[in-house]
Length: 329
Length: 178
Image 1 (cartoon, each protein chain N blue to C red):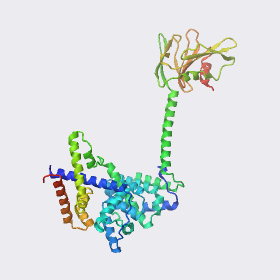
Image 2 (image 1 turned 90 degrees about the vertical axis):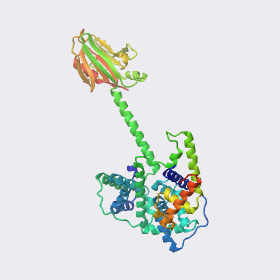
Image 3 (image 1 turned 90 degrees about the horizontal axis):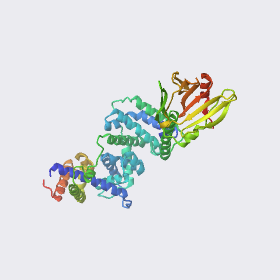
Image 4 (image 1 turned 180 degrees about the vertical axis):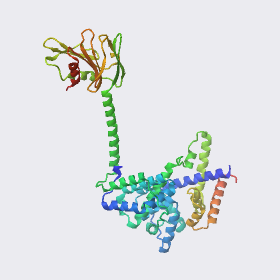
């Protein structure tokens, strides 16, 4: 094995030794009763040695003994898993060189850290950095929020965050469902020599029995004078018919239908008549007049249903009835 | 981010704002020295201040003259953490890698290597303090010999010599030839 390969192994072993040593010290709760208080002349020497320590050890010691910081916060600020073990390991290095391995007293460590912190001179940068606009905005909003009179705990912030995300998910779902509810199927109506063909081309959500039940609740809000509800009939698996009669025996037919796949159909009564694309309350709709009797007919989709009105009235009145159709509780 | 805004009084906020106004440039430079990239250094500075504000009650308890060094430590370590995350290849403990099984490694080889590493660890542990400490500082902490010498009150040459002797001792114990 080459010298380099062996040195790599030694490095791996050393790192593991330190890691294990720190982890072991983290778990060790035994207390020492034989601290060594360093004489004043050695305190500055100790400070000098703390300053030389690798950054992580030095900072951990300074926060612990210079600022009385908790192990938890030290771990958080320095991103270290075993803050106590790290500090103990660093103290061990210091004591091995200054007190022949005898633990150095917390008071001596504290005095040494005070010296370091008091004399920590900030080398002002020669180059003045011009902060980016993005940074300025972020810091500005951070500082502007500093006047807040309340301080949510970390736990509360997490809860609020979870609530916010949940609300967003629910809101998005409701929005999508609402959109699908409004346009939950696509249809195609075309006219040729054989007649007019209505085809459901795409259904965007699963239909339920409730959808069928709900269909009963859609009724015209306006009918011409003399017309009243007569009866429902001809109930099919996916469609309902309602009839409105006038005193003189005229009849308006209101057909309601679920947009099921097999509901495509054709009728030949439009042969020869114009098929006009219109809008009913913002929904896609078609108007035509039947060939055999010239009766105005409107087809439209609304709230995911396919509706049809056939009336003995004129075009405007028929469209007006269609526009008045609404869900009634 | 609004949830992070936790400072309670005007005194607290003026302390933070003063700190940033007076020393923001230096704190930025501290982060930049580690990250070598302006946007990253600004991010580190911002994130450090978020942490500081989260712990403002605690920081206000620290004597005034120690607060700035405290903040410097927080900024520096925030930058270091960010630096580790930024590395293309995440920090992998070589020793842990050794214990793990590489894709192209068979189980038998891995077992032998693991056993050898464990044996090496035991030998490092059994070295005298005089040899072990310089070895750990040099190889585990990457400290230069000059610093090791200062820390242990020995000459730089002696630091080198002790590390060299430690490696030779390990080589001998592991039955490896020079």
